Length: 356
Image (cartoon, rainbow, N blue to C red):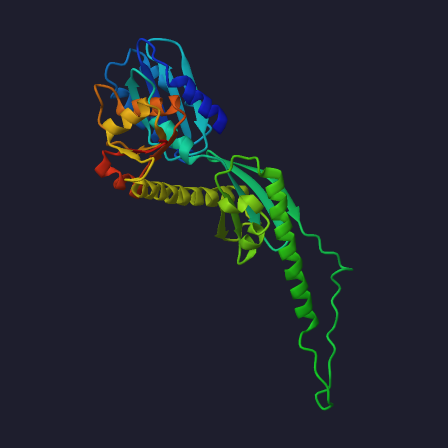
């Protein structure tokens, strides 16, 4: 599933309240696991459901044939308990634990985490004479473009350096033909990479890229970034040679960078919270304050612990109430983990930047 489709699904599900409730399914599938441990984990999760109608296990497992490995690393399902309606999606992105829940509404928090961390980015893999352009979104990588610097023999003919007999007066030539060739090649490569950056910016500036990764050795990422124009503000330089690597290796490296950048982004976001305390428009902290701010439409950005720690509020799942109100008021949503989640502990695991 693509990002835009998943976003529409979230908005469709947020108000879905069937009479028997919703069974929410998140399955983390390792295609290399021949023993299908993920299927055992899924059975265990369904077995722990309290109050789920008969046949729930068969409905959930029926989505996963036993004779073939499912496509996609993460499968997400929402089933009407006691009814026939179902929504199933698969993603290449991973990082969501296998879990099954039965509640009056869909359990959307893990899906929101997947969407928050899976926003699209561009990745430009470069060398001295070649550029490959990729788009990463929700773990899915697509190669969009590519260019090569053409070096013609007539233009790059090597000239022998003039030699002077040291026994005679005169000044010797300081650089060899090889040095001149190397300098010219370096100059042409730098110009090529800057122009490639300009081409990336002109063709893809309308893409909803959170970052642009410039991946290459030495000064090459900086040379490309010099041509990115407005996209340079979201450029991240990665010093690694991947130009001849298969796509699977490029995917793996992009995934590593996405993980790192998301953790940095979350830590910076929590830092912004701290800086905004006591300043206008201000911050809401803790469940009661954030809920009141959401109900008034004052929340610009909702931030909460992605891995739990949010106690039920007035008999209802707090996190689902937070997500529903945020979506209804067009607030940004960021579930955080790691260091950022630890920093939210003293705020009951939830806080918000306010609009006013």
